[in-house]
Length: 395
Image (cartoon, rainbow, N blue to C red):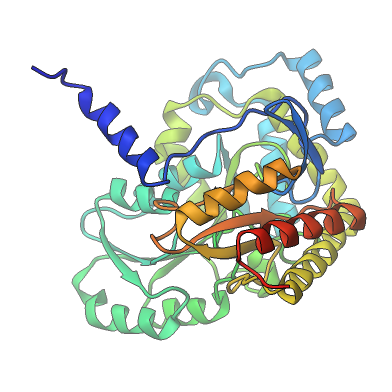
């Protein structure tokens, strides 16, 4: 008789034999242009540290100082005894930075979606969701119990068609899209989506995880990028990428924020953002408000690297942001490419199924303001060598 958990070993072996097993590497250094990974110093093209803030001295000092004053952990959920003056200050500052009426913070961007979506729609409602939306949106929709209607990626005419055919069946409708799609690097046509949502009296929500600190004036996000202030009902974001720390936010009306304080389950049932994280996020805001230098450098680096990859013959898909996928097709090739890069001193992980559809595996390069031109040129030379060795490019 087999053990009832034998299936785990069987499934893991299947992942390994199909080239889909994710061997997770270990870091032994702070985030930056270079990392120590599995004992080896490598050029870092993996992290979401867009602005290089994850190890910025001002953020480190802010976290250290806050720990001395407030301690380490909140020791409670926000709704009981976990809301500190730092949390409220961060929420006020984020609202001012983004040009929003109010914000609420969560422990992560994932939790922000899990908390927000089920609080605004339920079994009598429908969510109209881009087919490539992030897993946290998908899980939030499932938890809500609402009907889920998918529309073709970034295709506003298909969104209109889906709304025309089904909107009347439901009490409330919520249109949800990622702002920047994390695997493709393309941007949702939010201005067009907002117009369609308004036409059908649907609420509009955007997850701006990869747009916070990247898009808009000085990194104010996708709503600012499209000048849609007041036209997007719910804006979700994260503090774990460009801000360099951890945490999630929801921006919207004061009524929305008050409702989430009453009904968002991660807010009610999981401890608040830690003290050092909250303080570090405030320091990140100080830097973003004082200068656009880091955001400008990020885009300059991204444009240079992407143009050079294309010149070498690599396919970077439909990316128009610092997220730079190198499309390779099969997971076995992507994994082999990643391993060869690591041997050459470059850390760039393969992305395969189920994160992306089968047959669309890739190396996803995350460019940062922490890189200088020498770093980028070194990385390009290594990509060219591995690409030629594996027959991905010629010459």
